[in-house]
Image (cartoon, rainbow, N blue to C red; front, side, top):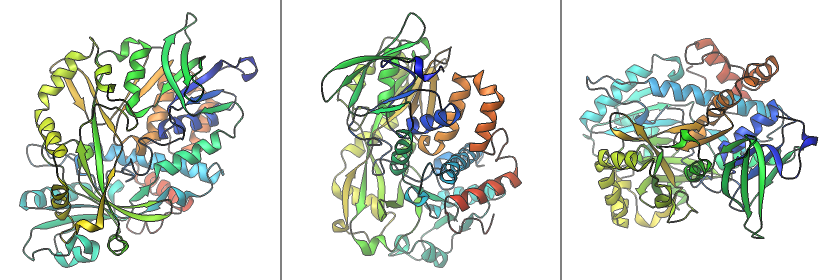
Length: 505
């Protein structure tokens, strides 16, 4: 990354496409590590964090694998695999470390504007699910990342933990729940806006809203030429950069395909839309304070795990239930109905067809979800809130997710539920594809991306020293070191003003 004074108006060191949490995180990391780097950010909408990072579009759980049952699958022998949960829990601690650095150094003023403590709970009903949850708890409780987790099948205890969920239950109903108090609620929209507020105050950083990237092509000197249309004036300009990051959520796949890099071949996308039921009765909202996750229906995508979710959005407590999945050919909530057909190319049609054949239960599930009536949605809610009344809840459209489809030698193509970084061999362009738990693990993802795309620079003493200042655990394993985990959590809790999170750790 060169000196800023050598740049023309149509040159930058770094171009970030999309003004969501991923670009905000990467831009902040680059600006801290290389303050002299010029950064230009393009967003097609007229505000930042308006797609998947927005609070109403994002589950906001602070995905730390404390309650999400899809991160702890059951093996054929009945045992529970917690390896993915450990990885995600560790990555979330890294995110909290970085956010703590931002607060400590006044890059962000008020941590309570984007993160708050809230119990994370798993809740199941039925004999088989109770057995699974008990085994999950017995496996997780011994790992220091999950110390403090409690388990109960006792209805009286459950009434104390989740009174709203227990109202109207039969005394003989088989129920079980886990609870852990170190969970958080994260407003990624507020965090994204705070990061961009700081970034745009730095010299050499430009944010262009209502600017849509129309093309990405390699220049003869190896740099990237990004053609952008100003949607307000309809004027186009081309900006050249050494490094391009595509963090456009569901829109990333289409832009990655425009780059023509061979690494992008074979990737496809499967869009899944979502809706919430939002509670409108303050008395009902006040009776629930937890994020309670259940088990997903067979064949449903992980993003459709039902949860009754306490949120704090713009200072107000809200209560959501869902999500109810749906299908749309759009890749973004504000996208085009032609997004899916436009993404199909000769190099990815086989993986997409193969993934479709292997996921027929998912297709049936989505069709059934689309056909749901308001009464059907209320019936699903009543599995978690037996006393729910239709007049207390209204439908809210959630964000659009695009699940990754990638080539697979054995099956031809597989549907991936997670996030995937795709980068060119020389590291000059990278894109983030996929969905959950992306936002919560954004810091780890972006640190890994920097090491992949700038390998030589990432080995320098100056880089490593600054990175350890921002993320003190860097180079060590929070998952393997109990003392490090304790120290990290204590520091983060103090700086982020998280309450009551360490009594049992």
